[in-house]
Length: 248
Image 1 (cartoon, helix red, strand yellow):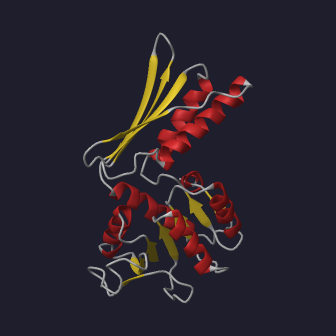
Image 2: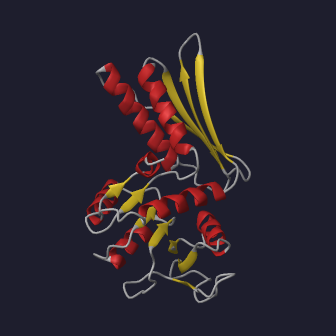
Image 3: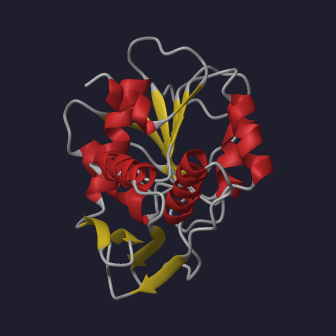
């Protein structure tokens, strides 16, 4: 499988490149970075590919593109691809409502799998949290996250996803609008990622915790999603991580 990476110089992008070039069953077709990157024109270690920016004229012959970049770069890639049917896996977060609507529109041309968190096991964690919220809607939820000190101090896409879906789950069961789920943000050292959700039941508390030890967890999950999306002739539409796991 030939894979192109958008955001190839980022933390997850670098891990993706390393996994691809070290795996004989995978081939790095493109390592895309921002036009101003110091890596433009330099070879990617272990391959004949050079880092380069994405543009409308690029011909990478990818079977699939994995995007871990920025909302601006992600939308620019969609413009560059145009109506091509190449599958795209997106792990970028921070999209505005307008951007998200544009992404959904692009799915008319190609299959796209979009998720706020590709780490292995996260989907099972998310589903268990939502199951508890539905069963015990009276529990007062709180979402917390801990990431490395270089990450922005605002809540991540993962925490916003969890908080929003918990609100929806509780609202559906209670029959009236649930209060917004608060999010607490921590930044500590080189922490890769810890996501936690607690439910205060008054006389008891339930707590769910999911911890990522290495960045390869995100990269491995994204590659697995890319393999699923590029196989089986997926029809052009928007897919979720749950779709790719349902076949297991």
